[in-house]
Length: 160
Image 1 (cartoon, rainbow, N blue to C red):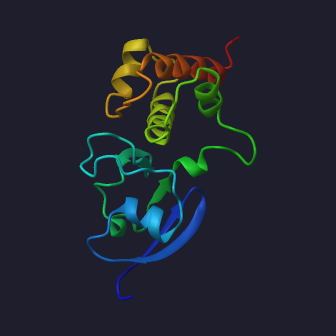
Image 2: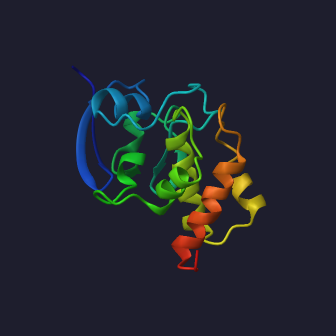
């Protein structure tokens, strides 16, 4: 395949790939690199199911071209856990049953991680605002918000 050669770091690993100029980061992650966590929900950046972080900034990977991540650091849901140990957000999503079909879950987890790294002690309103770019059609949002609140407490080291 003729394409654009891209060198980047994804979840701490140096990665090189070829992509077509019009190929989105979402397509590269899923179809070229086998990272299936980010989901295509809308293809227009409205649902957040494909959320990843590029150089520490939360983005919808359906709106970023694969070639644009040249020399940048990409974080996906696959990099959230540490080996067999789930991230506190993942644990709390399970504990609070803050997921059902799973399409939106990776995007919510990435958005929540981004929020808690910027604000380790958010109010409920700040959590809802921080997750506003993500849509869920199954659970409603209360369980998700409670899971993020609980994970924030754990991540701060407060007594649970």
